[in-house]
Length: 310
Image (tube, rainbow, N blue to C red):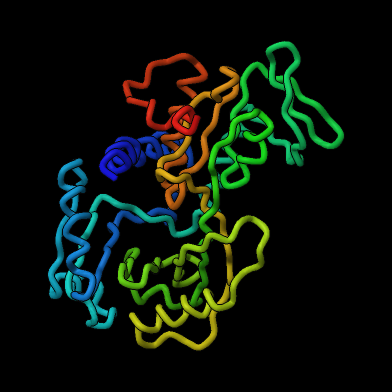
């Protein structure tokens, strides 16, 4: 656990500065807010929080413990069912991640990037160069990055590397026009769910479901999110929108794979960021780009290597 905490902190500590570099080139008006994130719990779960707080102190994560009155001052609309909490004041949240990605993508194209949407069937090699094959085309590259989230294993298996990647399915819904009830992301740890004020409404997210890539959405999990939101907030309607299921790519030690393939030094990986893909995307891209260019990152990258599963 301490190994995971240390090496997640190493890249999490660089996550916001890496985004700042990208955000200098796009217009983010109204899309990112710097109001921190709040985790709360009630007393039946208080003891288990002590170890988490201690570990964050040891690795240097900045946190502020909250009393009941401080929680109420930050989020007065939350029902008073909590005992204590912790606040991360440096945290930011996106009002609409999709709009941000579109802006980054357009900037990529403007700088000469190319995008092809193809179903990749196989990866093999022409002499030493990786060859990517779709149903109708083949592409030869000097170097290649596989960063397909929970679907990455379909390609790494073809490179004869058995990486134990699975998916933690997560759900979200929106209560349209109720985002005003809270000012920042709030996570209720006893029930393992969170809420965020978004452009689309009040987003309620949560659950961890080991359900693979093909099983249908579970209606009982959607109902659970609705019930949890109403447990914390009064005034929510009976109707909700945007029942959504996503795949969190997860590895047994809860660290991502970032770095070269075990068998091919011109194939690189960046996947397995579990619940933190959006958070760690920019720093992971920066690390991979430096690896490809043979530049030093001044980071200990061995813990992210796929060799740990050999």
